[in-house]
Image (cartoon, rainbow, N blue to C red; front, side, top):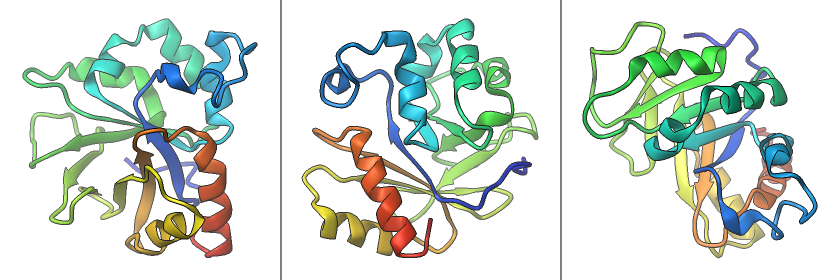
Length: 185
């Protein structure tokens, strides 16, 4: 699936939703819970959802998220064990960045972008475009460490998903500034 609204920007995001420890640390205490995704999407360009997170999403809540984020925002999904509810992928519409898989699959509709695990740890490659999704644990990294993560990304990286103990969406602003300074934004 081609991005009709591809800004060429590096999509930055985190893995998992919701994170209760983000309340007070990242989300203001007085922010209503149903505004949290909109607040997150102001900093982020993508979200990687483990199977248990996206399968627990109600359609109405997802539709609200889709209304609250930019057209170029993308959702990446981890597959559940066992049977895959392909029909639920349509809920994401054009904002579905794809599904991360460990090996080639032929049981998905053609319109579903599949990102296959690469030989390099923490990387997936989109089947048709050759673009890369990188997933990195950045717990405890300072600015020079974050810079090193960005500089080590393959040239065709489309999305960088970060995670780790104590990592919150606040780091996305630092990563965005660093990526712009490095000319990879």
